[in-house]
Each structure stands twice: as C-alpha cells, then as structure tokens.
Length: 232
Ligand SMILES: *Cc1c(COP(=O)(O)O)cnc(C)c1O
Image 1: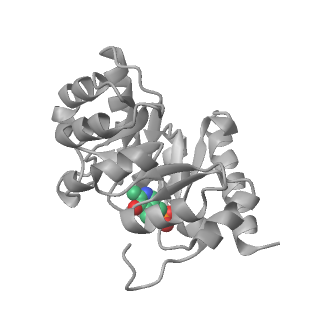
Image 2 (image 1 turned 90 degrees about the vertical axis):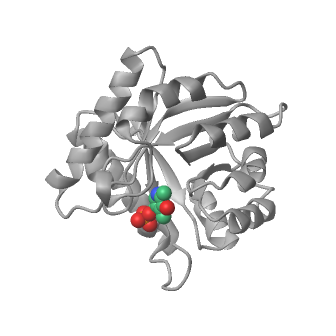
Image 3 (image 1 turned 30 degrees about the vertical axis):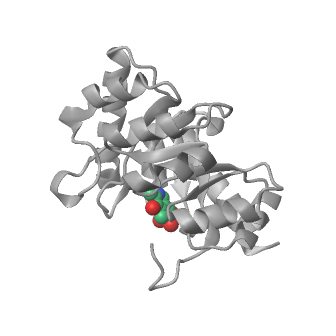
C-alpha cells in the first residue's frame, strides 16, 4: 500500500469518526485534498486511491498540474489569495474558489467565467480571528458582500471559508468554527441559500467537523510535510 493511499484511508476514517461524534453523517463532509507543492504524480496517485477533488493555491503550478492531468476527471479548487490580474485563468480552469473577500474579485470571476462552463462555485473567506489574521471579510461586511456576490450571473455562492489562528486543543479550536456556523445560519435566515462551510485543515479538521464543516481542506495529513523554503 502506498503512503498516499494509507494516509487517505486514515483521514477518511478520522473524518467519519468526527462526524459520527457530532451526530452527523460521514458523507455530509467532503474531503478536498490540498496538493499544493506536490507534483502531478502525487495527484494521480491520490486519484487512483479514489480522490477526485484537489485544492491548489499557487496559480502557475496549479495550471501546470491541471494541464498534465487532463486525462482524469478531477475537480479543481483554488484556495489561495487571488490577485485581480489573475482572475481569468482561475475563472477558466477551476470548479471552485474558496478565498474571495472582495466584490471586485467576484465580479471579475463572474465576467470571465466561460459561458459554456457551469457557474463557478464560490466561498467567501471570513476573518474569524480578528487581529491575528489579515485575510478575510470582517463579519460586519459579510451580509452586503454575500448579497452582491449571490447576484452575479456566472457564479454560485456556496458558503463561507475560514483559516482560524492556530489553537492548541480541540475545545479552543471549536470556538471560531462555531462562529462560522452561526454566520452561515444568519445569512441563510436573511434569504441566502448557502450549503458550504469550508473549514478545517490537517491539525484542526476534527474540531471543524464537530462545528458543522461540510468541506475540509487537508494537505499534510495526505501528502506529507511540505518542504521548507517552498511557497506554503
Ligand atoms: C495549505 C492549505 C491547506 C492545507 O493545510 P494542511 O495543514 O497541510 O492540511 C488548507 N487550506 C488552505 C487555504 C491552505 O492554504
């Protein structure tokens, strides 16, 4: 058995255990395998172990991998920060985008999404940790931004994404994830129809699932440690 296969199996077991501890169905949580910094051969190996959704956050490296793996039916998610001059290749090559925090970026993605493709699925990144994090929408700005993005034609607003500041134990990890769930519920009470909480990484996915994550983004626990000096 290869390392990637056994890691994937262990992660899936841990996801199922966390879901069951929260009284949720295991299939309520999707696994996004974060393949950034790993080569196309590692993605192919994960695919052969049954994984089809992959997350990338360095655009050029991602485009090279997408190109090298055109023979496989993969679903690509862009999870990195988005510069406005890079929106076109993202709109053209990905099925999902997780890190949107400005209307201008969403407008460009919508305008540049090829009309023969399905709408681009999108999550708004929320700043759940205040001072400790520079990225994400401030919670007070979330409702007007979500309403504006939901009205764009070639996008489908699916939900919220967050990368909380690191916390050591599971109780502390759950606090920002619980806030995310409350914000999603708040937006849905305001008439939005959101079904995705993209939260939880290798070190905190169990806590995220306890608080309602529907998609966990996991890299290290599947592919191993990323090398020092490589872009993270
Ligand atoms: C790298 C990355 C991940 C995966 O992190 P791991 O700790 O390796 O599981 C998840 N989400 C985002 C946005 C990332 O940049």
